[in-house]
Length: 93
Image 1 (cartoon, rainbow, N blue to C red):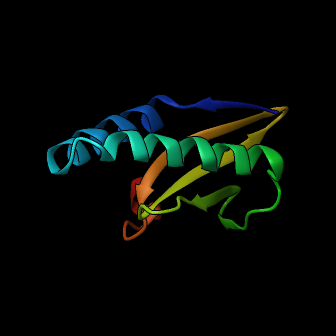
Image 2 (image 1 turned 60 degrees about the horizontal axis):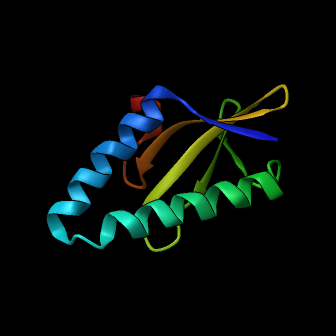
C-alpha cells in the first residue's frame, strides 16, 4: 500500500511543528518520528483501525495527543488530516 498525505494533512503537520518548536526545539523531530511510526502501523494493518465516521479511520500517535485521519482508496492510504484528539472532526472535515 502507498501512503499519500493530503494538502490539508501537510498543512496540519506544519502548524503542529511550528507550535512544538516554540515549546522545545526537540519536539518537532519527535513528532515527525511518531508520524512515521503511525504510518508504518497503518501500512501493516490498514483495516486494523476503527472507522470513526463515514469511511474515515483514525490512529492515535504515541506521546502526542493527535490522530491521523485516513481513508482507503483503491491501493492507496490517504491521510486527510492530523487533528488534536479534542477536536471534533465532524466540524473540521
